[in-house]
Length: 319
Image 1: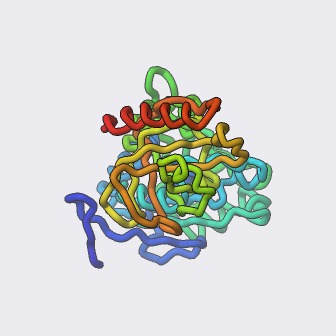
Image 2 (image 1 turned 135 degrees about the vertical axis):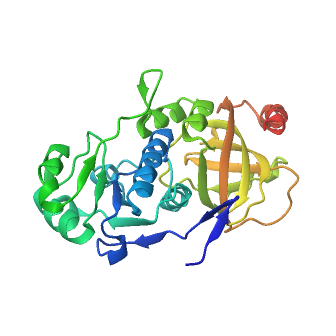
């Protein structure tokens, strides 16, 4: 199998499945089940442990996750929730030495599956894992009837072993995707980036907007944030690159409703320093470096322009 490198580390391309029908050489593997939204430090600790098992038992590691995330499926009005999209998740799983990912479509039929059927048919027959890593509060099956106790009950019958690692805590708080969402919504970006061990980012396609920024001397690339979590609205120092490119450009972003222009729709607007060119329809990754200030409505355009110049100075000094 051909290898390629991330930095100096050689990595095998990850195998992607959309069903439970996996290849024989991926059976008797270590399976980790969960959303893994954001792949924060708590998740990273889990995968570090899984890699120890992988080395000890000469096995492979696989992830079972669902799309859409079950919480979003059951709550159709929950529009902005995710810390990362599926592509980002797979990219980060690859860096964590995962061999394969099963992304199963979550629908009404899946949600109605009896827990015993999931254990017998999916785990026992199709995936046939050696170890299953789950959190202690893992629930599955129709009406969330299945739990870790039920999984343990069938260990011997289906020849797997349940591993329940202890959650990672910092200052007595469990590191979770929920905690990180709260930090984002409160503008605590520095805490978010520490808990992710990387800069939180949004991937999106540049859309044609009303060109309001260009009219006042600050042209922007407008990006729809889709179903990403909505952080605290305001101005951020950012760095940006085209997807599948490695060259970053520094910039400043406004995430919000543009109250000075009576905007109604949430929008991510990015102004890049020392850039000229057409980015329409390009796919960009926007990494958030620093929260500069909250969004506010200015009395007139001149006041807004003055504040933008102040914000630019802060953003340009941000590393």
